[in-house]
Length: 240
Ligand code: ADP
Ligand code: MG
Image 1 (cartoon, helix red, strand yellow):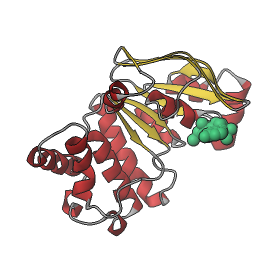
Image 2: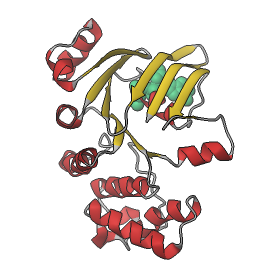
Image 3: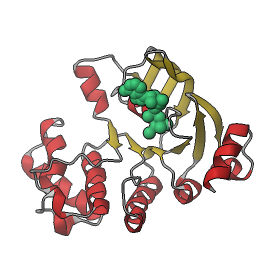
């Protein structure tokens, strides 16, 4: 579903992605771990070309991501992304936030988009809030809306970049629960997270990045109990 082949990326003189090779099959839940600055966000952002790469190839469902233009917009719509900051439209209702993508990008009829939006808001447990503005919701609720909004595009892949890092601790689980149920439903997911409980429970696979490289690629079980590299051991000793 996602392929990255010999991907290289620099920011000026900083070599931020080094020879990235990664294939994520349909339905796999991949958790990306690594210290701050190791390139996790950049990796995510290259998957839908929010960041261009210097060289190498990225494919979504077997199709090479084009550099720009209409074809890129089309493919990008197949990749949902949820960030640390929820980025909801502040002056639109929760319902409209979720309907907007399907209407504008997928050219869905408004009535159909509304039905879809309501069903997704039900799925993330927040349909009763649909007429409120984002600021009237808690952070955890807003992040669940952001997930519903991404799902409304009916993506083939969902990328999560530290979706719970900005939340108060008591709201983390309500977001992780939504992610866990998506994982169980077979969504292909790439999740950058510091939530080790989620990584252990929901991930099929863990990659560990350090200084722009994928240093380890294993199951959560073997990563957490038997990390191979000194950098992963050091990382785990600091967080566990
Ligand atoms: P992570 O998500 O693992 O913390 P990032 O992918 O955000 O790491 O960043 C990797 C490195 O690239 C860091 O050193 C960061 O400062 C740098 N970086 C990220 N985005 C940019 C940018 N737009 N311009 C310049 N440097 C950047
Ligand atoms: Mg990051």
